[in-house]
Length: 351
Ligand SMILES: Cc1cc2nc3c(=O)[nH]c(=O)nc-3n(C[C@H](O)[C@H](O)[C@H](O)COP(=O)(O)O)c2cc1C
Picture 1: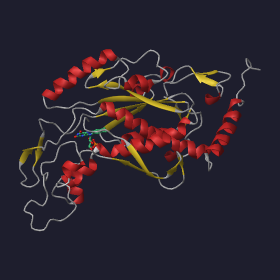
Picture 2: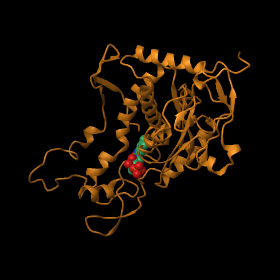
Picture 3: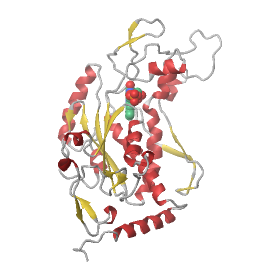
Picture 4: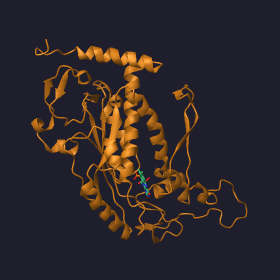
């Protein structure tokens, strides 16, 4: 983490800060690249006795190493692991920033914070600050509770000394999206399904919860659903409000207008400095897995990636619903829809 100072350079697709319609190409330099030039040399060095430097024949449990070698007929797991590395999520965060920029024009904000790391639950605030990310970014772990940071850092340091790793859970929040994104009509248009798939595609993510998530399965209906009250002058929710937001802002695969609340669970990092047992594919013998340079945990970074993935899905749903060939056209479509739902339900109190 300490060698990475990511900055984006735009190579194409923009002019004077606006998109042109041509593909947007962004370059994020990898500072470690120069140390890998020989190992990843694209040339076939005829006669070199060590054609593949730092070949990996002892695949790491929990990585793509072994399944990838078998599937793609490789004898060196490096051909798999460099491509399987979560470094690709840099591209997701960069492209996700463009989706966020679109959403920002419509008052949609996406933020995240760490709610669990390495066996330690971070207490949730009773009221969320207006700018969740500003508070999360002030914490080295991206939590909203400074008292938990010290405890967790102690835990990370102890686990690092053991050569072990930790996982955790992030909560991602999207507010400002109106009722009506996504659809109930067919499975692949349901926004909850699309969000879950996007989150699950993040390396090391093994669980996604929407709203109460698994907790909803343990409750009765009366304790699991959100009762609805009239609420004049609440255009984003259709002039009603839910008393609670246990559904996490989604009913029937459609946004309710309440904030989207998604939790994403990440397993511990697969590369251990005290490596796990594996099989050496060159000899067929039991061996210890390779130990590549690796972090103890990546949970603070997970939230940033999950925000980008949510931005992709919500921006896509926005374009489906409001369409248009320019921002102004999209704005007209948006305003017309919001104007219509704002008068759709009028309570007696309001009339
Ligand atoms: C932000 C981030 C950083 C990661 N860093 C590492 C790392 O340093 N070492 C490692 O072994 N795995 C790391 N991982 C996890 C692996 O990429 C992931 O577990 C692996 O590709 C196998 O995929 P799967 O866990 O989804 O099955 C990281 C994941 C993320 C999201």
